[in-house]
Length: 341
Image (cartoon, rainbow, N blue to C red; front, side):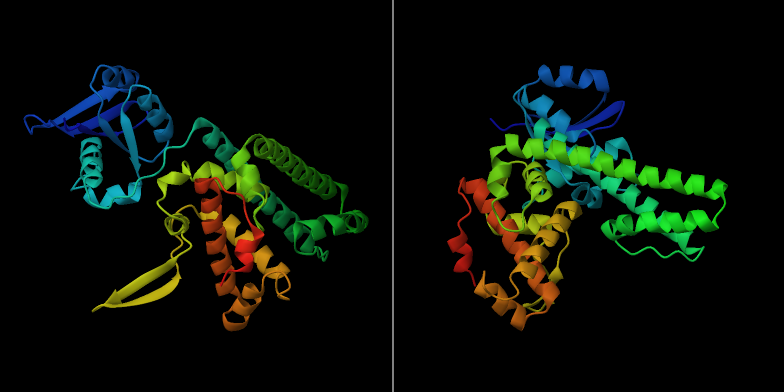
């Protein structure tokens, strides 16, 4: 028997449902309060539920799994082209249903609660990092106004800060110095908070075998290992390593007409945070291998391609290697990289 496809436009209070009755072909629409949604699905036969991958979608998906329903999450970018005329809850639910019927539609893997917890720690750390950068730049700018120049970079700045503050105390009034001292304490507290989150992520990596397996790959450290395991959901959701690399946005964009296809730079689709971590990891691999003693193929690549292109290629290779380790349950083998081209 064909299962009913039910599209759900989730919200904070009122949910809009849209489906087509498989027996009569009639279009059905229903509005439900948040507290009534699970009760309604619990009393229905198992269905295929489609939702946008937005806030709260993964939690709702896990709840519906318990009632035997299959849930698929669609990226909002894939749904938007199917919204007709006015953007209402009913129109959004209909667009979700229509988008789910398209051939070749890609769906977002449903994450477990543990994966969402790890990603939440990453988001908190990223926000603290942005705030710390703003605070250090503010301190650097204020001191520069009085002729005190601090070096770029957090480590260099903290090293030069004691002498700079001593110089400032000689020249500046106590009223301003008290405020500058408070700014320094804010920066130090932000760093302490970041260190605490990193220790929690370290604990997660020790507890999750997949993170430990991925961390054996060159260029993959604490942040990349925990982020990639939490972001990709189920590794087998991707049919091969190239599909995972494309999901991260590390494959070339393509444009063409008349049967001629031209490859451009990387697509930069998908999770920008995960792609940034992989690019940083690839950059560290390239820097350590410039002499060619570790991986001759990488030294040869640097000779015939620009530095940034080589970094993007290594990031793509990191993504593929990570998928192979996680999807196939293998350990990273250095000899596989030695023979790479």
